[in-house]
Image (cartoon, rainbow, N blue to C red; front, side, top):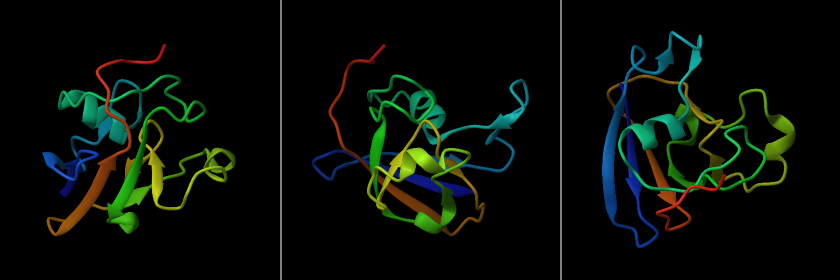
Length: 116
């Protein structure tokens, strides 16, 4: 299990999401769930649009735990344009599962909307 601690732009802890190897895989789609999937499942309101790493709406700052997530997937070209401490939640996934793992993410935008 890895814990995702989600912080607001004002540095307030919004939610802690527990990610296990079992709940991180979407059997129907045969692919890993993204961090955005977990945020939306937890009813955290944040912007997103393309769901493929090109619009940048779902960007978050990684405060700690870089080593436990995969920021790239198959999207290495996209990531050249964002800071190494940022992640696009629509393509980032959890890659390490251990009860001591904590990934702290800070939302970069306040949102009650979705870009479509």
